[in-house]
Picture 1 (spheres, rainbow over the protein chains, first blue to last red):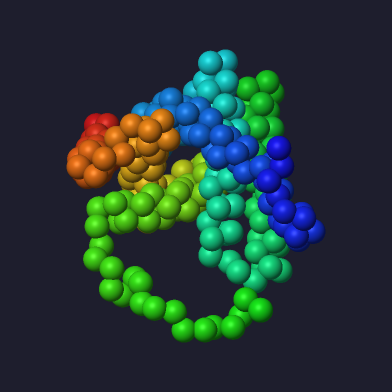
Picture 2: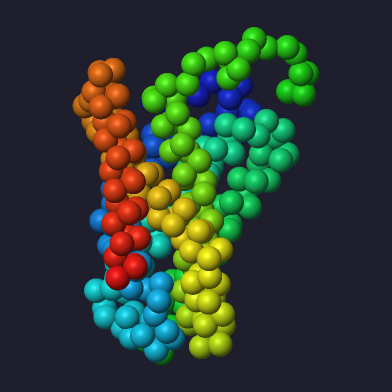
Length: 125
Length: 126
């Protein structure tokens, strides 16, 4: 059942798939981020001081690659959803708001793709 | 029509800061700061794939005093956002919404984040 009024539909707003999708995706990515970010947090003391060869060797394990990829995907989706809310809350000029939201979505996608390709290049190359 | 700038009653200037509101805005600030951290992390992975020279430059930046400040601010933001996020997830399930429980979990979140950050600092120092 769609509760959107005709006026809201005409404005083109409210296209967040009835709003629940955003809320649920935020929570699901958050749950996915709990173990993966804890894992990365405790790996940080090691990674921070690694030289090039050790860092490459660290990524070679398949389990680590899976964890990193899961982390990146969940992180960037969670980040995009969260910043979307912040932009919608504080920017009221429609041009600036929608421009920022578009840039945000595209940037998150590009950064995610770059990171995934890099990790795969290190692991497979 | 949104640019009217009509006067509104004072809010932030008069409302007493409480642990509920302060933790809430800190959660948001930590989240926004963590986007820089996320960017830095993705940069690190791209640079690692690109070659030794660039990677060494980035690692040197991160190991400098300026970089270490950024790293530990990120660690604290992550720990705080994580602990407060778990508190949010409990609220989403409908648990712990009473005011005294909220205050108690609030203090727990602050203490846990500080402890976790110190733990990471200790693990990096040894």
